[in-house]
Length: 158
Image (cartoon, rainbow, N blue to C red; front, side, top):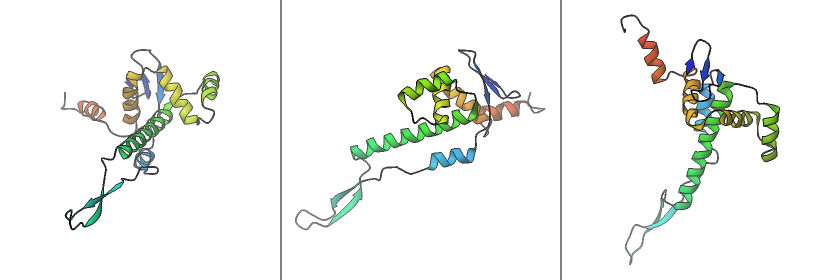
């Protein structure tokens, strides 16, 4: 549940109240459009001629199973980067030192953003993360719900 005046979001399940702040739409877009590490579509040799008079060429082969696996992994990594950015930047919260120590046992290279993301995804049920993300983004860019709520508040729309 969002309280836009206080810039807070309350978990309906746990009752935890999180303070929100806008995230940079430009940086989020930059993360989403980053193509570094994206696998290249492989090519395959194709005969444009006949079996007796072959004319060989190459075509892109996006159906290559290795490419499909690599692309899926890359897309998942990009989605995770966006989620880490939005949640860690959009929620004002300190990570308890004991939680940071717990993570360090498993991943001693985790950034502060990753620590915040791990902590928030620990204290907020997974089925509420979409609502939390929408609440953060509503502080940043217009959402359908936000536009509907604002429109409902105009005189003559009641």
